[in-house]
Length: 237
Image (cartoon, rainbow, N blue to C red):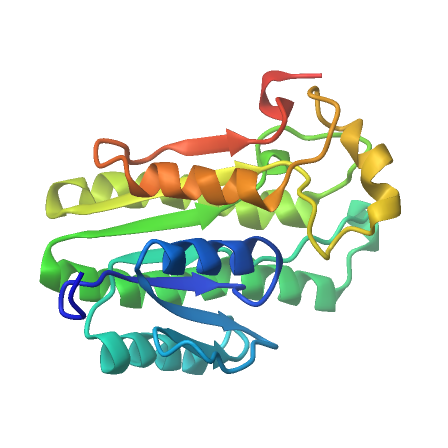
């Protein structure tokens, strides 16, 4: 694939966990990548541009978009992976908790997606994948998560709305809804307890989510889909 034809993916929350796994797999498939997070370091790979910053800050959005266009000249896919999960009883949430969840889960998604779609429209093609969570659709009394439901649930609705708005203009919009995944967010000693939240009786792997994202990437007849990779949670308990 020539550099002119090489596709370009933007991946938020790209420094570790699911995001790092997605970055690695898109590169393995020959894509160029723009990866962003608060703590991401410069990459030795010339086909990976890294942008450190707070995704809820529009200035970070500007640097991500300009990094993609100046380095690679196009934007084909945006993976909105950055997110924060704060589990507290509803009456215990603080002003800072609210600002963090809304800023990262919604504000960052909104402005970056708006800018990315504007560029995709120029080419008449593109793909957005939003990372949500099954807790936004299927509440669990053992895991209080109103802020997650409010913000990630908003992404579920936005996924469907954007998919319909742009279906006739070459842009697909889908979501992946994970269960608990083995990432640095969870200490290994918690895996046994977390496994009980899933009917399959285990926690998921980063590769499970990466493969789901790539399935949506390679499926041009799918848009508006919420792909649950959650060990069966969405089906019931």
